[in-house]
Amino acid sequence: MSTLVTPQLDAEDLKGRIGRFREVEGEIIRQVRRVIVGQDEVLEQIMIGLFVGGHCLITGLPGTAKTLLVRTLAQTLGLVFRRIQFTPDLMPSDITGTDIIEEDTTTGHRTWTFVKGPIFTNVLLADEINRTPPKTQSALLEAMQELACTVRGNNYKLPGPFFVLATQNPIELEGTYPLPEAQLDRFLFNTVLDYLTPNEELQVVDLTTTTHVAQADAVTNGGEILEFQQLVRMVPIAESVARYAIDLVRASRPRDETAPDFIQKYVNYGASVRAAQFLVLSGKARALMKGRYHVAYEDIRALFIPILRHRILLNFHAESDRMRQDDLLRKLLEWKPAPRE
Image (tube, rainbow, N blue to C red; front, side, top):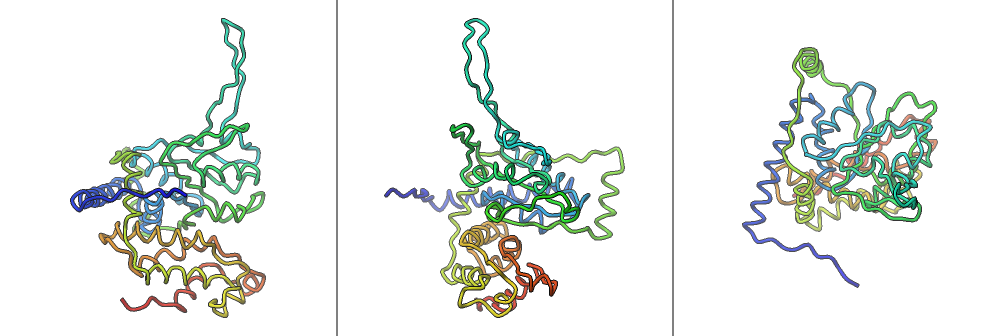
């Protein structure tokens, strides 16, 4: 069995890459702030997703700048951006592409030619992903996990880096198709956009009701982002911190012996192993973004709710008592505080 090992860097090279990472991260925030007001936690989570190589599900009410945020971030990263507006009549081939028959006018010979769909991009905005049937939603499954798609038995690799940033509206649920659990589990974060503060709304009005058009400039490129993803994986994590992350995830499963009473009462199914993997990886990215080269307990706790809120399934007791995923996850963090450093 062969094992792929990431090449080790010498101290000076590593120091230079960390410095470049922090420089780019700060410049990305500065550029995005020229267009987007507020939503600090949301921006942090999406950037962690980019540096980890994960996908984000963005849940927010209409008019909360979900699409604008994704488009601005793609411009700042210097990546190719595509948007798909999901509708009930959208077909899988509208996403992946399809084979067409082309005829050579000189010879009359006909051949199959693959026409790439919008999935062949770096940043894919799947707008209102819950408005299309499961058959079409599933066209993204292979792409999100394997970074490839299969059309008529032929496998096509997607360009790297590849991110799916999907949006959904928490209201107007009539005529929508909830994402299946297998697809939800492939999203790193379920990021929630809330309303802005009064002062932030005033900034938005000042920014968008004049002749000035705010634009973000590119500060990096796809190749550098792939290097950052390798750098994130090199961040060390203590066994005690990794075990704390695993213990939190295992405590979300009602059949686990460590699960508290309220989890056993309200939860049908807890988070998968993928949640623990994402929790550790995201903690590494957050540590780098905070200027540290080690993962702390605070990184795990800060990212626990957005990583797990779409991975636990509640039962009818939770519905009758009006308990939400966020409520239970907060109780779980209170139930299991971080050990003292």
